[in-house]
Length: 275
Ligand SMILES: Cc1ncc(COP(=O)(O)O)c(C=O)c1O
Image (cartoon, rainbow, N blue to C red; front, side):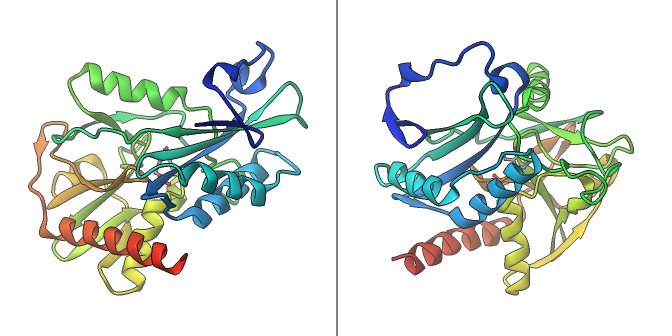
């Protein structure tokens, strides 16, 4: 299912002129929201981040209420998968299109390995949100992230794990990271300039609700080797066990099952509260 500015179209209607700024410069913002049996999990959180991205990237006069209605309309046709929405700059600062489409569920490999890579273009803690308003924007300029995924794949890994110049673990090209030591679940802090991942927000929520013991922290590559377990977090990965980072193998922690159960319960609870 495809929508352009709220109107249902067919795939072949997505014709962008070469001067389109999202094509030319990657000038756009996006969100991807997971469908659980026609229900959009964490929709309001995604919309809030979308509004923040719009503000940071100087998109004005966007009707987010209408976008919400259209997202729900798309989701109402599917039992799983994702709705993706892009606000794409057209040919000048004040012109844009809202592009929306359904994406089938992503297949995540059972065995999941990550290769660490330095990310010189990533804010990585050198610039804070206060200093630079575009830190953490969910923009469509993703070519560098995707290239790091491809480089890792070429080296036989499932994906990359990005590092700042001090070898501190940041995030994946399309996911957040967390690790477990003893009875505690850790996530990196947002001051590192990582995306304010919605899935990561839920880990904090589970901590606040005393479902897990959660702390924010920073680790280098050498330090993450000492952790009991590592997991990936994203809209598509609600606590995916990481089997290996570089040459270090991990064992799944029983806490991972707790994390996954927390997400299942959260989806159920949110769905019920929306009926
Ligand atoms: C760079 C980056 N970090 C983290 C995430 C995870 O964010 P979320 O949990 O909102 O899907 C994503 C998702 O696309 C991402 O692209």
